[in-house]
Image (spheres, rainbow, N blue to C red):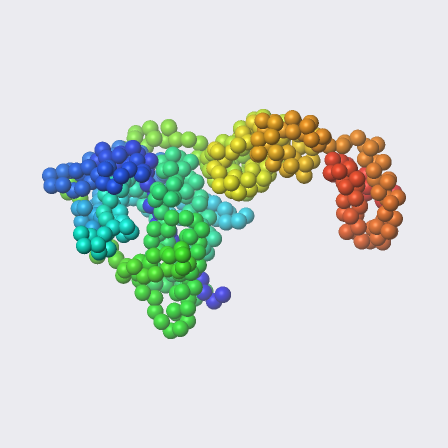
Length: 485
């Protein structure tokens, strides 16, 4: 508890262009090794890079979404390092003059709203991939294969300020960023395919100390769960080293999910180690105001705008609105439900989308676009809750039947076939209440002697007598009236 964690994230977002950032080679995932590496990607002599306009426009979209400063002129640089899967022995990136500077992202950590400021976002090309498994040399020795299909894939690297103070906050930021880039359509967000990868810069310091500690970088974490576990492990490791009198080495580390630990990969390089200099083959990238305006005109409604609309027009809380707009597909699904509901029914719709529906999707590992229950079918179910035909408890059973495909997922047909209509007849409920009071005088005496829990017991007895079909609010009101009269 004497230590504070300091976290900054660098996220590599693969842009959703059909071709690479400096060539016309395909970016399609899953092709046979080295079948999507053209002469530019392989750095054959005499080849020259040509900027992909679509990659620039996607970067502009992101900049507009986070209120970043879009540079009227940005410059590409050569970042020099020597890996077998980097054909040119340098990576084309941006250094001193990136396309985006500043900006911020607001999101929720639990029910608390927070904002993380961005340092910059820059365009760059991806490297190829080294494959270390299932390769042997001419004499049967272990070998490494090189696949250059990813070489030249367009990336937007988004860098935060070191403002996050917990692994949970870092994961919430990463989820919000993931939701935003998918919402905009600038990235497919597929973490298993490497479309969204996070590097976590982690350091620790004594609470109250304003000086940042020595950081380590955990490289290429490709799931939110692993990101949280990697940060927690690395923070514990650093604290143990410092408390034992040691020092932290600035280095790049790898997270091993099987052992739930980070391991040293190499000493962390500083900027001067990469010998950045402007790429002589690429002119400065000029983005004028007219280009920005054209991109802005084709932008979808942003999550923040839809959050605000859900609050002002539908009366949702800031938290519910934020959860519903984490993904564009969820927001669209919810809004379609509301269109088929009586006015003023947005809150129960939000509860069902974020509750029962989300749990079922998570259980079956489905995206909301794959939901077997359509938005219109869900609206039919929620309508029957709102109009008092069924209770929330019974609705859960109806939803389970709809999920399994019973009666073509028709809520009314399931309610009718199972005889689940809620009892709302006041005289019928009064008769059941009178019978319960007569059958359980001891519980009645407990309630009248001040034991509030006895009231819940009586409610349960009435609902049992009604086989769960009585309107719970009516039961509560009638029972309380009779007990207190």
